[in-house]
Image (cartoon, rainbow, N blue to C red; front, side, top):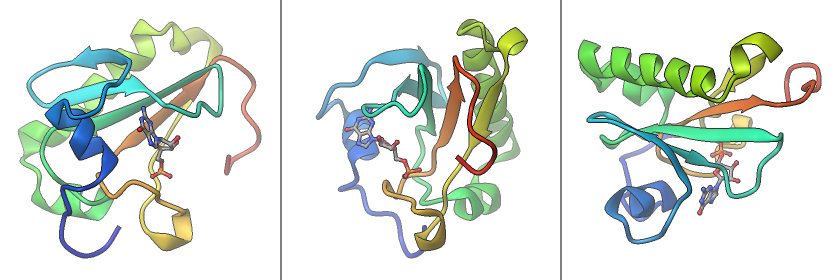
Length: 120
Ligand code: 5GP
C-alpha cells in the first residue's frame, strides 16, 4: 500500500493478459473478476485499469471520472450478481496493517451468505 506502483503484481499481469482470470465485468476503466480463493460464495475483485497502489493513491491521483467509474462499476457488479436484496460487503485493504497482498488498488465484493461481523 505504500511506495511506487510496481507492475510485477498479479493484477497488473491479469490486466496485461499474462495470466487468466474469470472475468465478470469490463469497461473502459475497470476490470472485475472472481477471486481465486473466494472467502464467500460471491467474491469478486474490482480493479481500475490504471496503476494505483492503494486507496489513498487512487483517491489522490485518479480523475473524478475514473473515481466515479470505479464506484459505479462496482455497484453494477453487485447488482448483476443479484446481491442487492440479500446483501453484500465492499471492502479494500491498504498496506501492511490491513494485510493487503496485491499492491494494485482493488475492491472486494463479498456476498451470497451471511457474512461474519465486520471486519471479515
Ligand atoms: P488483498 O489481501 O490484497 O486485499 O486481496 C488480494 C486478493 O487477491 C485475495 O483475496 C486473493 O485471493 C486474490 N488473488 C491473489 N492472487 C490472485 C490471482 O492470481 N487471481 C485472482 N483472481 N485472485 C487472486
